[in-house]
Amino acid sequence: MSDAGGTADDTVLVERRGAAGFLTLNRPKALNALTLEMVRALRRALDAWAADPAVTRVVIQGAGERAFCAGGDIRRIHEEGSAGRHAEAETFFREEYELNALIQRYPKPYIALIDGIVMGGGVGVSLHGSHRVAAERTAFAMPETGIGFFPDVGATYALPRLPGFVGTYLALTGERIGQGDVVAFGLATHAAPASAFPAIRDALAEGRPVETAIGLHEAPVPGPVHAERALIEACFSADTVAGVLTRLDAAGSDFAKKTAATIRTRSPTSLHLALAQMRRGASLSFPEAMRLEYRILCRILRGHDFYEGVRSVLIDRDGKPDWRPATLEAVTAADVDAHLAPMPGEPSFT
Image 1 (cartoon, rainbow, N blue to C red):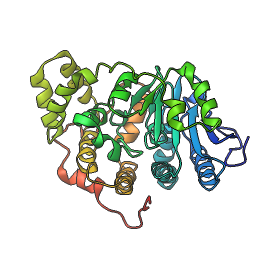
Image 2 (tube, rainbow, N blue to C red):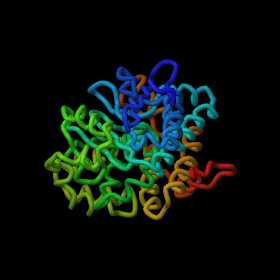
Image 3 (cartoon, rainbow, N blue to C red):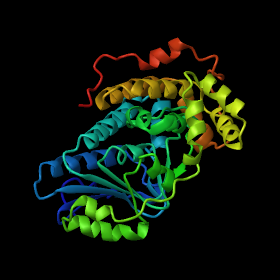
Image 4 (tube, rainbow, N blue to C red):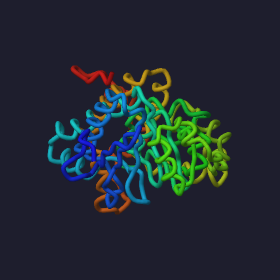
């Protein structure tokens, strides 16, 4: 074990092997969900390895077979915010976003070996690196609108840059996509069976060229969402959430009906914010996108829907959130603008 950033309880395993630094998210029972301590451990290791000429590449992976990383420790954040300890929750997100920005500008190859669930915070510590290898169990999603939150960890930058408005589809619906679609849409740069990951790790540790180590496997067949890309582009290019729903209703296919029904269960405020992110994010730099997300985050933590969404989905699990406002029409442009407005003293994320 390296001293470059391990934590006292080993929730992040930090190891230097040959030419590679290995980071293993090690909370398999919690689907490797990120805590503040884990974020800080990852940052320490990455800072140390950036300055170490003996480390020529970094590899991040998740322990266990169920998840790479299913997100952040939402229950803890819910507890802090519900108790009015907003500064504690803001600290987690600020440092998480700073970690995302570091990964995005990291000076060495940063390879995520993704097997199982990759959502929310797990997307943030994988998607912005130079190489993302998706295994056959990969299940990607940004499900935040379903808990009254918003697609963060750099989604404002990354999702609008996906082809054919598929990023808007993912942001509004929160639907999961598998290995084939993840590769087809460019969310992963490579694919490999999970059984090949040990050999990939060995090759990376031996110092072989990164593309040689990870690029020897065939791309999977695109998945079912890719097959709907024409409909997605036609519907999710609308200027408003109501417009998206109108087009989906008019399309009338089973996919369109299911997609519209899913959107109608999401927080109306979150839907408006997510669409604003997707439309603005395409022209923002990465630091600008992270600043926008931090503004939204600070306002969301002082609102209603996030706490109600977590209660409904993760705590009581009744599936009956009381969104406020309850309808898309009741969310005003001023409400959205208030979430997006600049704040004094906000982090730069550069």
